[in-house]
Length: 319
Image 1: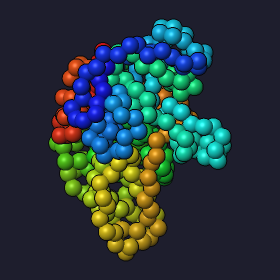
Image 2: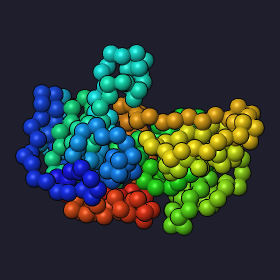
Image 3: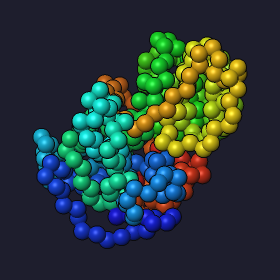
Image 4: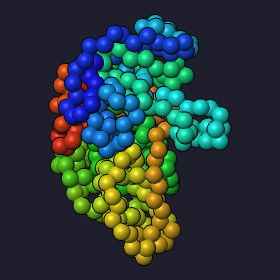
């Protein structure tokens, strides 16, 4: 198990966690390395639990079952792990906005470990036909990318811009292509541009898209990209910002960036309904998941590579 108080992560030996009533005990098979883990470890996000074990893209095998799951079943553990179920947000189907929400790898120990526990109500059933390593990025990168597409409100047959092309973006792009959107990717990485084109993007550039966009999703946590992303939108376009953390946004010009009913929207976590919809899509549409594997003992290297932009696709810790 890897825990943290300061960077880098340090290994610790602790007893196998005991599941509470209604929880599953899961033996970890693989865990995706998410940029949110990086924000937690680097202190960009406030500490919710000191020395928490990061990791919220967990593929595991059920060891102690509950809630209709069976021993030996492969399940997923994602970012969202608790909501109150009774606030006005939960009651209107927006549980991702619940003020009492709790998160794997932030409020509770996550998957940079040999074992993890999860409330059965928040464990995810997984599509068949994918390896453990390929499933892991689907559980946050994929789900959040899916929600970001919903927030971007791409019109039928519309032009979609994607800024940054890492673990989440390369999955969202495939959903977009499957839905008939014209996808234009902007990323500094030559390898990522090549990957984008191989996955069906209409263009991939290092600066600006070649056509006005109906919608865009900003995956890179870089606030200085917000003005050019808004300026690239056509009239009535929507920019969805997919990250949990973003560097400061420069001053916007109303005329250049927002007029003609352009709008900017944030993305906050996901609902379990989002997860179910996306994983159902993955069952019926085979996604190509670009994975860069690391051993659990190499978690600091994986985070360092992610921080430096050396990961093409998704980094995954493999048991």
